[in-house]
Image 1 (cartoon, rainbow, N blue to C red):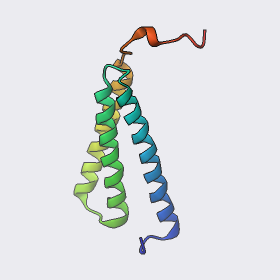
Image 2: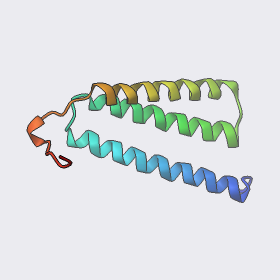
Image 3: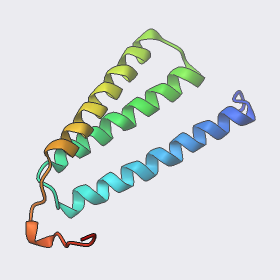
Image 4: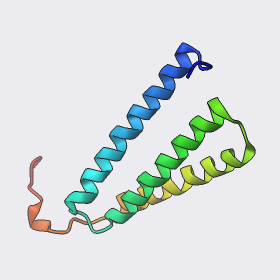
Length: 102
């Protein structure tokens, strides 16, 4: 932490806090088991976790082309799985859905 300037340290901490909030939100959705394809959401969250971690390592600690390729691959898989979850998911119990905005 000594070799990171103040603003870069701020952005590393900001991305870490955002990642933790996103991961906790996905974990709550997965644990509640309200959707059929919740494993896609969990896999997307895992790929996002690896992607952001690899980007932080690649950007601030140790630059390597391998980390760049892995980070881009994880990002593509995370987006694909997340969009697949959004497009194809269904609620486990449709009677649990309440009409709130009609």
